[in-house]
Amino acid sequence: MNIGVLGTGMVGRVISSKLIQLGHSVKMGSRTADNASAAEWVKANGAGATQGTFEDAAKFGEIVFNCTLGMASLEALKAAGEQNLGGKILVDLSNPLDFSHGMPPSFSVCNTDSLGEQIQRAFPAAKVVKTLNTMNALIMVNPSIVPGEHDIFVCGDDSAAKAKVSEILKAFGWSSILDMGDIKSARGTEMLVMMWALLYGKFGSPNFNFRIVK
Image (cartoon, rainbow, N blue to C red; front, top):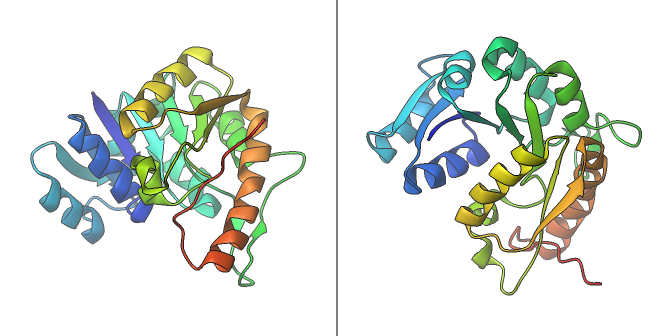
């Protein structure tokens, strides 16, 4: 499958590399076609890896992953182009975190809205699925880093899109996938990241995740 990944940071590189390992072709998108971080990633990942602008990556992908920083996600997706996202699954990994005042961060949106919802409203023809935003990037693609069974959350309005994304999550190694319902549920999964940040500070390590016990 051809997959577009928006973002050249740690999350974008980790997700892109795992997708290449799984046999997909991946185009990493950034603001410029010659981004140095993307070029380094392409060099390390072989023939299935290419780079371009946000627009290039969105055009290329049958599925598109948004791995940009939450404060810049809407701008990046606008650069990708509504016409290039329409009808496609848009997997949103972003969090609306504002670090301008240090740690712990604050939210740029919460309680009565979420970044996931804002993205879905801005791109109504896209099938937005919120997931993978509640953990460290390495755990996203290798849940065995944390011993035992733990959970990943999926939110979105389109059931078929969530099912397709869940197939990818299973290929990443996830077995406990909790469908939280429609995209409004992103309010909860995004706000959970505040607890994640506090626990990171307490443990001094990002190698943990959440497990729902009932």
